[in-house]
Amino acid sequence: MLIGAISDYLKSWRTGVNYAYLNFKDHPRGCEMLEHLIANGYPPSLVIEELCDAGIAGTQEQNDVLHLLPDYRAGETAQQLCLRDNIPYRIVSNLNDEDCLELIRTSGIDLIILGDTRIIKSHLIDASGMGIINVHPGILPEVRGNNPYAWAVLEGAQQGVTVHFIDKGVDTGPILKKVLLGTVPKNYASLVKGLNTLCAHALVSVLDNLSQGLISVSVQPESAPPTRKEASKDIKKQANQILEKGRTGAPVREQEC
Image (cartoon, rainbow, N blue to C red):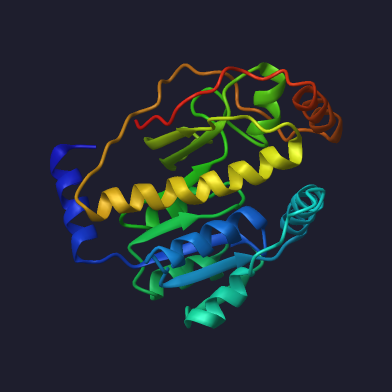
């Protein structure tokens, strides 16, 4: 970003930003992030959730994983949170379709923040004047793509999350912050839950910085490891076995970029 553009961006934050929050319907990570945003004084102006077969499958799979934890208690759904706090809530069949685009255009939205969603297409990126912020549950650019935490276990990579703007690539946009997991859990379910919570905290930390007039952006290198495809059940099973055997990297610290 040019210095002038960054200055304008921060001025917008100081005067108030209307943002839309997008998510697959009831996805646990997206709901936990939304709950944390609201609790910390960043309620969205609009929540749009996508109800589709792919989203239902992904939500069910993560719920199944999380409920392996004996002390896990699911939080409120996005719809329940919106009803509680009087936030406009809409459901679409595809976040990339015209219905979603029209909602964004007619709602005075400056910014879009993503929970767990499909890959967002360029027309929606272009419709958001202040861009789209995503929280990737992995470290960028090292682990791009689907299920980065599973691939990171198999590859011996560090676990953590990355807050970044999205562009027309997959997980290639400018980075606002990285937060690395200090202690890697001893099983796959705990890893997923830990990263969900870390995503929520990292996002609020970035919004706190922006509201205080602080921003740090780094451009990702053009050369990076290949984007990972969705991890199979066998890959996730292998990841769990590795974690249970304690084959993890050294503890790491929080890192801002």
